[in-house]
Structures are given as C-alpha cells and as structure tokens.
Image (cartoon, rainbow, N blue to C red; front, side, top):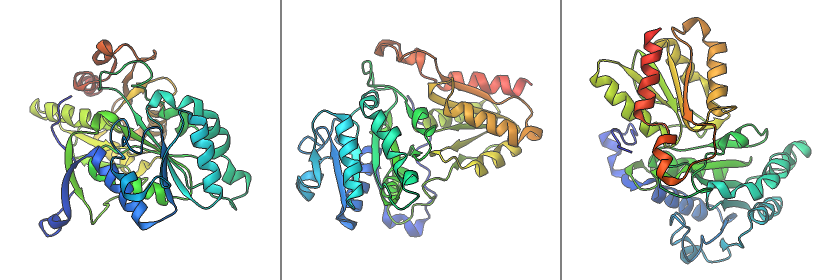
Length: 342
C-alpha cells in the first residue's frame, strides 16, 4: 500500500518545536506513557504486553518504567481480561486492555456487549466504566485467519460503547489519551498496517476532539470517506484522480460511534457525491449506516447515489488473497467514475 499524503497536522512554523516524527505504534506508546504518568489510576492489561511489549511492541518499555503492577501480563483469556477490567473500573481504576489481534476479541464479546456497555445505564449514570479496549485490526500484513479482521461494526452497533479509530500518528497520540480520559467505555481500533509508517505528531495541540470527523484533503467533485487504514488508500486515490483532472475531497471519519456528521454533510453538499470505503464486509456495516444517513439528510444535494466500497461479504481469505479482498485505490476510483457518470 503506497502512501501519498501522511498525517496533515496543520502545524505552523511557530509550533514546529513541539512536533516529532514517529510511527503510529510509537505514537500510541507515547500517548499511553503520558496518560500513565499523569494519572496513577491508569493500568495496562493484556497478553504479552509487559516484558515483550506486545506482539506489535506498542507497549514496549512501559512495564520497565511503571512496574508490573501497572503493566500487567494476563493469561490468554480475553473474557477474563475484560471482566477484570470491569471490576477494576468499579474500584476506581482506569484500565486499558489490549486484545492481541482483532479475531481474538470474540471470547470477550459477551463481557463487552452485555456488561461493559450496559453497566452505566443499568445504574442510571451513578457508575462509570472508564475502560479502553485496544484492538489491532484490519489487513495488509499478510497474516493468517483471525489476524486480519475488521469487527468494528459489532461494537458501533452496541449502545453504551464509544468506538474510534485513528489513521495517523498525530491522532493516535492524542486519541488514546482522550479515550483513557473518557468516563465511558471506548473501543480503540488501531489499524495494524499503519503501525510503522511515520508521520508528524504535534505534542502541544490535539487539533480535533476525540469524536470529530475531519477533512484531510479538500476537493470539489466527489467526497471520499473512510477510517483507519482506508484513509491512506483514499488519499492515494484522490492523488491519482487529481492527475486525471478530478477533484476529490477526503474525510477521515475518526469516530465510528458517535459519528460526527457535520463535516461529512458539509462536504457532500459541496461535492454532490459520496464514496464510502472500508476494509470490513459491506453488509450491515458502518459504511451502510453512513450511506443511509447521508441519503436521508443530504438527499437534495446528491448528484448520484452514495456508493460503497468494502471488503467482500465472506470470511477473511488466506493471506495470498488479501489484495483481492481488501479495497485498493483502483476499486475506489472505479466507484468515483460511476458516481461521476450519473
């Protein structure tokens, strides 16, 4: 996957002293470190996150710095990890759980959707659940079954959960801290294929709140919308489209629940066309919900139907077939051509 635009932070020369270049994985590490230093109630829990620093080394060095009482290597039991985090939250702590891979989250699904998401409402707001669940997700790493899935729609559908996904190192650094500061449970989906490319991180200015969507490239003829790793693909598609004389605007969703529709609708009313892209299967998905809402709220501005580009409605295939399954710039541009043809 080729990058054409990386992490537009909008910084000025006067603020460059606070800007550092780092990969997204290191940005999350730095955000976790800052949150732990600022609040002794913040604990990290997960499989192999301590001495090893996690499979992707996102928590590397944190146990050595904060000790094994705050960076806890857990048994291989996702239900136990989430259930323990719920108890810790009841006791006044702010636990951050790591699910080692996206496809391993299902053993903890009942604890997340039946308990974590509902306890605050069940107690009429008197009990808060400041739990963050970090989920490396998505494809493009050539992995096997259960290691390249995109299960975010399950959790965006579940009332009581906040669901976010950063696409840049800058957003990763700030969004993980904002998620930890939230008194509601937050599902923090980390696009694992974006762990390594570097980008600028402004350590002095978050530039957007946790649940804001954001225009990352301006255009006039079609809006491209996505989240996580898909934003890089959309920027690549927009660059190719520009070379062919088509002006595409790119919107980074950032928050999947709640969705910030303001910038999305403003963009669609300007361009008249929307292509929504995601790695997840298309049926009953985040993209489906956004397409329906935009069609409802911006109907008279649309020059073409809202079009969706997604993974196929099948289980994730063997690694050698992932390039056929995952949307790329060509599939996005094919949808752009169809939208412009109306």
